[in-house]
Amino acid sequence: MYFDTHAHYDDEWFDADRDEVLRALPEAGVSLVVNAGCDEASSRAAVDLAHRYGHVYAAVGWHPHEAKSWNEESAALIRAWARDERVVALGEIGLDYHYDLAWKQTQHDVLEAQLALAEELDMPVIIHDREAHGDCMDILRRHPRVRGEFHCYSGSVEMAKEILSWGWYLGFNGAITMQGARRALEVLAMMPTDRMLLETDCPYLAPMPRTDGRRNDSRKLPRVAEVIAQVRHTTPELVAEVCSDNGKRFFGLK
Ligand SMILES: [Zn+2]
Image 1 (cartoon, rainbow, N blue to C red):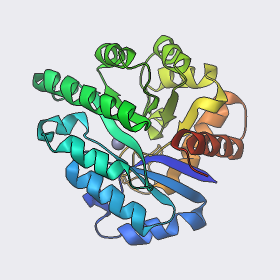
Image 2 (image 1 turned 180 degrees about the horizontal axis):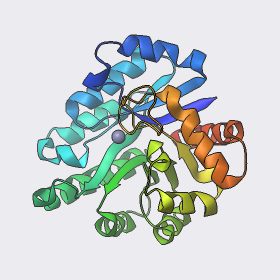
Image 3 (image 1 turned 60 degrees about the horizontal axis):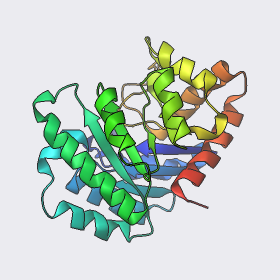
């Protein structure tokens, strides 16, 4: 079975056929999905999906791109959502310097606030770190009691070793099937099997080759597992099983 530990089925790209796609997943071998929130509306939508589909769970939080919409009520909203048993993590949260450099300090403040909430609520975090490795690591080192995962891991082998030494997990998706993924493949070759998570980040990051369009969904996870299996000299089926067990352990699911 496959566990897609990071998806965005609330995205408008699924507006035309969301129900159809989500219903088709179990039969296609995808037994579990965590839908990550990016702001108030998408976190609410994630919780809603998690209540509507037995195989979907929700993560709630403010993505660095949405840091500007964080306000005095946001923490209270997260506390309320966290009481819901279908909500299994805070995320996705983190830093992203690709577009938004002017809002660096706001991103730091919003990440800090959510890490404090993760400690208070004893919930794992899903970290989004794009082109912000140094600052992201500095902030996380100040929160040693928080447990979490880096989704779409894009850092170095050295950085991975430090994250793994905290007991954290690393998530991999279609990005590892693309050109320039050499570093991620090096990390995959050296890391312990019990800390790997499979994800899509769908509708984004459809794996290569994109023979059936640019939109991604959880049914394309086998392609990601195939690339990991090559690097680790094992089978995609075993990668899928181990990563599902890892995901269940990480999110505290049966
Ligand atoms: Zn995402």
